[in-house]
Image (tube, rainbow, N blue to C red; front, side):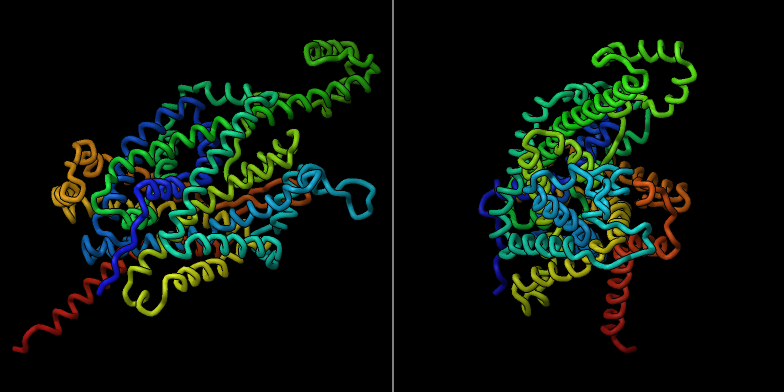
Length: 592
């Protein structure tokens, strides 16, 4: 007899699993960056519109497909049409790519978490040079936080061509990260269902604690004022709308097959429409909430750097012109500078190159996203807080919970189609399949712990999923509406849940959402073509800063292969299915 499909213990467990998967690192380190880049509070206008016309409808579509077909991504799309199996295969390939590099972030979070118990924090001061006569030269040219990230954590090479060896400390952290994920997914929904309660709720506890602390920091209001001051001219910028759509799309984790996998363990009568609305709203509210925390920290860091800059100028002028201590203050600095420039023109002009132009606005304008925000900007702010070890432990623990929560969804997208396969599941138990997936991912992931590993990490982060996911979700939407048939799907949903499909969902699925995805696809494709030779940011130790370099030819070929490897699954599997059917039909034709 066929085994009964495992189910979530209750609907709340399913909602927590979806929230844990959807609410990830992008909410903390990408959304605040986009707010900063595209007009602060005014960015919320395109963001909310894109949530309504793209986020909610596509999330509901994937949950409904999973719940109706009660299979992983490959089986679900094969049920709709045998020619669409490639959509599921493409989702699994993209999820495999994502799992390979995403868990490296958890490894880095473990690394920083372990170092957070030291006093002082290891990234708060520069180490001494080999002669113990001064500070390390690379650290002095950069900053203590940049030095700890690029040299101590990554031990980064000067270019992508110089691979170097595997760094054993990050490698051990990566093994620990994969071991943690394996223990969480060991028993399928039985173990994942319990873990998601923690991975979904604990980050909110930390964010609330951080918000309370952030609002009490000196200069926090400067950051919040910067965030909420709308730059309405950005509403006319098409890039603001494109980035809002992209953020919604990738933040909800559409196209990976994770949501289909999670929904396949639901009771058929489950109200997935309500859950789609809840998950998408919680995900977007979390992004805005995380931005409040980030901008209060930004404000503190910017104010700290601004006041530090002013104090250095005051000290320089006081010593150079033998001014009385306390005479020069922030309030009269500009006035005194004008006086000194007119009274001692030659001396002031000699000193002028050393006088920094301090600006709070320019400090707040410094936009950083991704690992730069998580491991450099935040650590820069944390080291200047009181009881910095406590805030560091809390922060990296939160990153770890967000990362592991997303990894549970990524691995579910790979494991569900594998465990659904009778060929594989009849020979191997679930625990062995999970173990093999984790082991293979961990082994390949060692590439990212090499000296050039961070450059390869950026390649996977930028190119492994972008175009592929847009095409996957476009084909999914077209398949449901025009291959399976919207009326038929509506009838299925009504018989399952007892609720008729609202006109809003029909309009979005049949027209608005597909057109929006096509627009995004064209934009990304044209952007790649117009960019010309693709470039990357390499760390120059002699200058203590990032420099732009061109990717070598073999890396460009690899990027093309990376993008094509998942996209080509869709036409190739369809072609293979057609050939197989044609071949079988030829075999069964009667001989004349």
